[in-house]
Image (cartoon, rainbow, N blue to C red; front, side, top):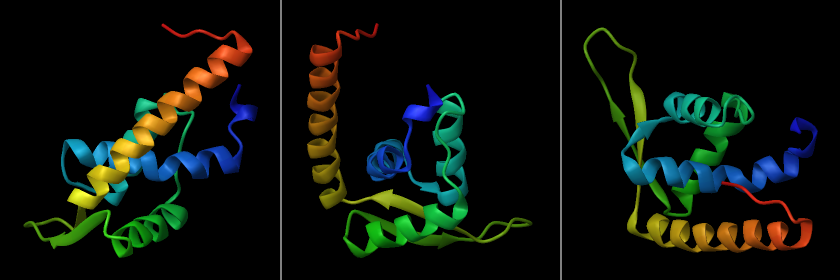
Length: 113
């Protein structure tokens, strides 16, 4: 099954996953990476080398905003929050993914609980 997760499919879902996680609360990059990996049961993972450039692009588009947070005895971290524009993009992406999953199910006969 993991063989079906091509780099193209993973890349196409990355922004959607990040916006979905940020919709709940602000998070830093490493936390985003770990949440995606844990919630997908290890099927999806994003390395820092690809994650941070993606976060910077999303910030340039106005979908997210980052701010540096310093805490005692911890490294400085950049926390990202979703913007109003990001929420609009997320709504469109959620609808698109729902339609995609339904279309695949209709063609393949695959059904999920």
